[in-house]
Image (cartoon, rainbow, N blue to C red; front, side, top):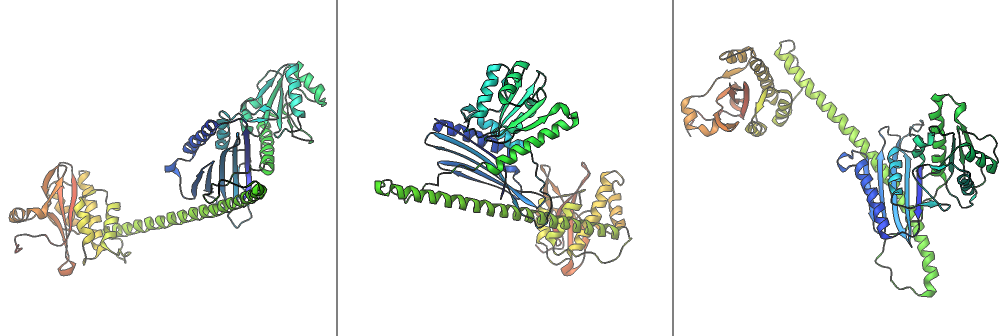
Amino acid sequence: MITTYAVSLDAVDCTESDRLSVIDAVDDWLVRNFPLDERGPGMTVRSRADSVYRVTITDAHPSGQHVETIAVTVFLEKGRLWFDLRSFTSPSGTKVVPLRTDPQPPTRLTALVRQVLSHLPARDANYAITDTPHVASTAMEADELLALLEVPGRRLPVVVEFTDGGKALTSVAGSDLVGLAHIFQVTGAGAISEFVSGFGYSLLDAGTIMIVWPGKHDPEILRIRELPPSSVRAEWQRLVAQVAGSAARSVAAPRVPPPPRDDIDEEVDDDESDDGRAAGDDAAVYIDFLESQVNALEASMADADRIIAEQKAALQKKGDQVDELVLHAVNLELQGTSKGSLGAVPNMREAMRLARMHCPFLEFHRRAFETGEALQGPDPLSVLQDLVRLNNVARAWKSGQIVGDSFKLACRQMGLDFVPGVSDNAEQKFASDYVIDWHGRSVIAGAHLRRGKGTHLVRIYMYLDHERQEVVIAHIGRHLRDKGSSN
């Protein structure tokens, strides 16, 4: 796994209340950026919540070339409160291609650091780490900045922008480096002159940005006024990428306490304390190793999850294409332009699914699906063809192209054997067979289509709602009881 972003902050003299405030900030950030109902395939979220609070988000990139892992850790140990945020990328492809990750710190990560800093009084070289630039406008404040640059224990670089009172670039873009650097704006001729004389670089003036690294390293200098306006942002992003990349490659994660164990005695002899501490250190190292192994396995699982989801989507797309082809073949047959073989519809359940999808001008009562899916014997494709033909008639009826008795004629023109109703005797004697509830009232669904004989016989019963111009399919199955039935 390759670290792409790392911010590690700590503060002393903290309490459990401070720890809970930071955890709440992380939880709020997690809900906003990774809501539960929007976590798609390839994304997993794991958490640990004992003395150590840790959230690990694994997200497989759509390119299939890498998996991103974000780990947030918060813990309190002997009054020192730690916050550690890291982003890793794990290779998951087989091609040698450029890594398409943004060299700039992701906005969602810098937003979390800003939130945490409002609850965590982190300091570096006894100087507060903030999310806004410090302004040095007097000679005394310039001397304080020079003193900060000379502190041997300073861990973060210091970004210094010299301004003449105009709009400072770090005021607009400085949030890119929150938690990664101290940012100062030296403004005014007096403060700039004091800083230049104390720092020893003579070519520092308004319109210059300088990065002063911890230790003995040459500073990085960017002269904004020598650049065309279109290049300023790109050069600033180069500096940000340099700082963020340096942090990712050099800032070690804090040693996290191991999970609590029930099999460790609370009392330890003094003679065994040194051995216990050594064993504890070894255990912590081993736990860190196991954690890295788990992250690697999670990355592999996330990538596999993404691939499975893509394959399912491809299969679904192919299924939709088959449905469209079946419908197209049926319509071609209706138009008399094709008499070739049609794709097989394996069963009535599939025929009903296709009918629901491709017959938008038919209304299906729940009984129609119950009876249709249970039907065995007749050819499912023939039933589907009749429903598609009837859908075309219903469309013409709803659009006003056919009226009254013309419905029966339109069915005949479509090749459908339409019967407008059943006998009065059948309606009275076997009313329960034909009555359905429709829009809050009981209606007789006696009109029907006839097809086949014997074991291939099928009837499609319907109700014609003349008020709403709707064709309601009520029953698909065998012949319902009528005057010829014995019971």
